[in-house]
Image (cartoon, rainbow, N blue to C red; front, side, top):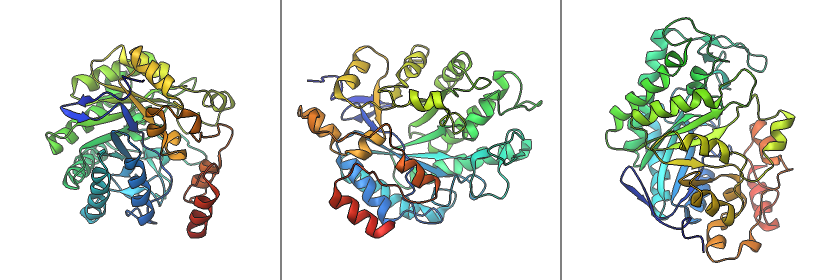
Length: 371
């Protein structure tokens, strides 16, 4: 059963034991200030024990406070954080999974900086970010390279650039948020310049470490990035040597639109985006988005719509999902409720998230410590 899903696969020569990837999911488990915490270590130990081949740790900021989404966002902007990250990488690998760390600059969605920075001064939820100078753009690209070096030093098997969710890399590519009139604005060739410069800096810093990319294919906004342009960016990243593209849709400005809320309740709601990008590149493509059954995951692979299956809330809700699917016990899976947003509400209030579907014993233990 599910021969494709549980077959091995190589990414830039790095063998994965199956086609399952833990997609990055921010839950507010880092310590206040961005250090690795006991809660975070326990969480990722459980995720690595689940049976997925690759665990992609949620975004770690390359520039604090300017690039931090919150005060509980992991940090990789200083050598001071390498030791904690090394412990995290070690725990994931000890449990048999490959370890990847996603690095990021939140740009206009930075929640810690007094005034966020962005390609252009486009209002964001009542805040007006400051437009970056060209010197600052180069400095940030350099910080990505320094952060990637720390990822390698900490012992991770891969590094992933966060070009999704409307964060800084995506902000440069988007015609909605990039209104510059210099070499970094205007046509797509200019708007994609910054992500490609970051890719070059990161690859130079890590040399042989695979560099993946969380890829925004469509902002799901009328004036935002669409597949017609994102497909060309995908081709440019493939030519630049990206290890894989982890395809997604939407940003913080579209996630809560009524039509997108309804869309996101559907199983596999981002598969078509991944398939569209896969048809334009020759690098591995990861798809995610409520892939709740083994049958759906297998179908995606058989039909060639993606090469790897990303599990985020699906895996967090029930870390035994891979084992239950493999042994044919899918009826026992505890599923994320698409009509529940408790975890999102907690995160938005700056609190560590928990799942209301968890068993009572686990919930009581968790809430006694953190709520």
